[in-house]
Image (cartoon, rainbow, N blue to C red; front, side, top):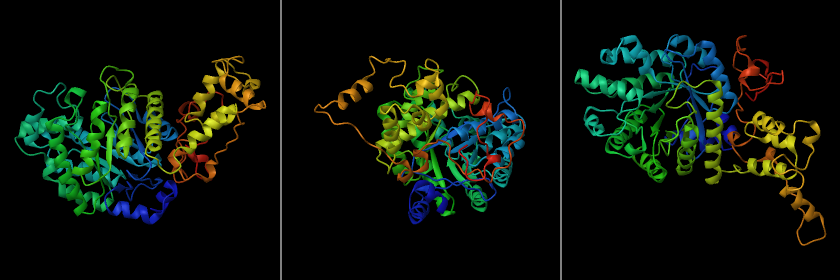
Length: 478
């Protein structure tokens, strides 16, 4: 709690009160030794989760570790390992070992692989897999315990049916076995496992809408009512809870969805996927969803689950992770600025001042993705002399509006010269609302394996590698 307070620029007592009231969670398994603790709650800076993981057809241990480090470097506050392919144990353990941010999983995926098919799942197998994940140091788990027998008929007539992996698996199990959801039936036993290892619930929205046509329907809200019940049960067992929210919602319904969850779940942190505000843009769903994510964060969602350009199309690679995180760090920061979080706008002001002063190097350093900003500038004006220039290639010398404005203010006219300076060192902003993105204490992370090419992971193409966790004598930035 003291470390969280330091990162959020809040008093430790306030952190304690929020966690005790269930309004915030600190996902921190006792067995996650490399963790730099963080907090998720609407009174704190909006957080971003990055989904990584392999599939039956794509990615291996090396690829997943590279994706993990790409995610952390570009600002993920948590990562979820959604692997469904091979080497699940090894990938999960490696992610926990090398991640300074909380690691989440969805244990039903492994349970299905071990059972052979969804209908062959047993209560005992599910509990065994959940306990194993807890013992391996996983900080939070998605548990789709809110999908009940009586909810399934409510999905009839939907445009896209049940789009959640976990929700569809459990629906098939219920249909085949004629019994109640085993995760609901065994929920108190799961609570006991979570309490022992200090694992946080991420109560899954197995009946979330997979298209804007299905948003805010009976099935979604019936499951939400059950998630409210389960939230209170988990609290009774001393277990932290956040609640997952819908993936496709028209813009005008997003705030209502957030407010409804907060009321039904007694203020437990809301963790939303997107939401996507339109369904027309495969290949650009990091944009369609970041629009919705900004509105969700403004309305009170505590954490945003990123969407990459590959959503609906394929398994994300490192480049997609980078693109998704850029979109969602922008969304989270924009929400914090809109909500007036202490100091959140200071970063914007500092960059704007550098832009007006034509301080190109500082502008690059303050950018969300410094390498991208520098590369784009240098595509047309690559020389060092252009780092001192009072123009860029957009307008050139003659038509640069800021140069014209400065020259006008330098005369003895009616306009005063602009002289402002924002001191980020004294800003009240939380760490995630200050540059650089991806600032975590990595001093407890083991040395990186040789196969992790940091230059490639971090986007450097100048022959130099970014500082890695293994080289850090003090908290590193990646």
